[in-house]
Amino acid sequence: MATRTTPAGTSVAREKLVASASDLFYREGIHAVGVDRIIGEAGVTRATFYRHFPGKEDLVEAYLGVEDANIRGAFERAGEATDDPQQLLELVIEGLADDVARLHTRGCPFINAAAEYPDADSDVRVAVGQHRDWFRGTLEALLTAAGNPDAEIAAGQLVLLRDAAMVGGYLDGWERVRPAFVTAARRAAGLAG
Amino acid sequence: MATRTTPAGTSVAREKLVASASDLFYREGIHAVGVDRIIGEAGVTRATFYRHFPGKEDLVEAYLGVEDANIRGAFERAGEATDDPQQLLELVIEGLADDVARLHTRGCPFINAAAEYPDADSDVRVAVGQHRDWFRGTLEALLTAAGNPDAEIAAGQLVLLRDAAMVGGYLDGWERVRPAFVTAARRAAGLAG
DNA sequence: TAAATGATAGAACGATCTTTCTCTTTTTGC
DNA sequence: GCAAAAAGAGAAAGATCGTTCTATCATTTA
Image 1: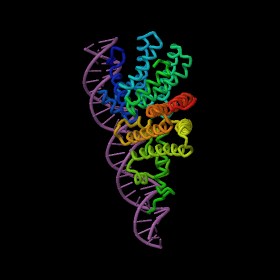
Image 2 (image 1 turned 60 degrees about the vertical axis):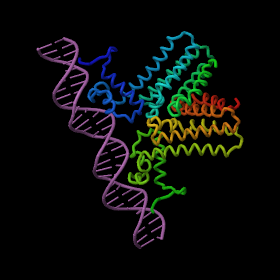
Image 3 (image 1 turned 90 degrees about the horizontal axis):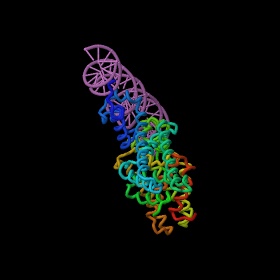
Image 4 (image 1 turned 180 degrees about the vertical axis):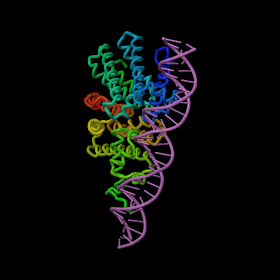
């Protein structure tokens, strides 16, 4: 075989495609970005693209997979940084705020994707639902470990607040949303001050 | 002139176009809906459409204008129903919850539109910004009238919560979001229990 | 070195997109 | 009833969409 591979084992062309698609899909929207733009930015030809992916739809799913993996990775790194559940909660809330402020200034990739995919049974919407379920469940486990007696309710509030922070950060500017988010999130998580 | 007009004075063809476009744009997304679908649903020909609108973009703005007018109308009706600022706040929060539960089950038209229009200077994004500014300002005035000493902060929290309710209601189901929204909104507005 | 396979290059498919055009029919105002 | 203007009907432009194809080149493995 003549497939160029990365140290991680996957093809370099495929990784460039996913990276370019992720960047473009997030910054400009999914339906607004054509295959030509993606392969152009990736420096790859159409034939190469269609050898790695059955179609554009699969590139969308790969994009959401990358976003999902990034957030899960951030949670794992936070979990390795401390053993104290309370402190972990603080780190998570700080991390979410930092993420909205620096990385996700165009809103939430999953919320934005869902806006373009009305069919709840589509693969994209299923991926969105799975991500949200994971996020909610992880928060609930964290809150339970921190001794929160109403972890399920508090987790729901934190999901709510993160959605709002993503949307508000994009449309109103993060500096306008940040104080309301941090205050409400810390209270919802049962943290001091 | 042979323009069929409604009692309100505007052309009936134009109203049908805006109604069909609003329905389709909201339910399926903007880029996903073509002009053919819109004129087909409206029972109007292409020529008629292009005689009333310079292009599709203007139909998008008309759609957001309708949504904006609907919400402003709901606020006005609530204002006519009572003179007590506290009770008015209750009505508004109830109305927002009811709106998400029954009318806006596909998320917020403005948030969804913004997801498809990354350029902050575009007419669509300007319309979104104006709507949000009006909403925030109206809430702040309401809270001030109700005697809230931190009306600006509270208004920001209510905007945050409404965004979250719209998104969460769409992606997680309203029954899952409702308790968190009502509780948090009443607390943010300074209402009892 | 030879066969195999992926990547490159580029044309081309059919479908759909927004927009424009012509022609005919219908409706309205006078 | 007549002239004016809008709506209906449909073709067609030109662009772009996602996708497929046929070549040729480069690289790897046997």
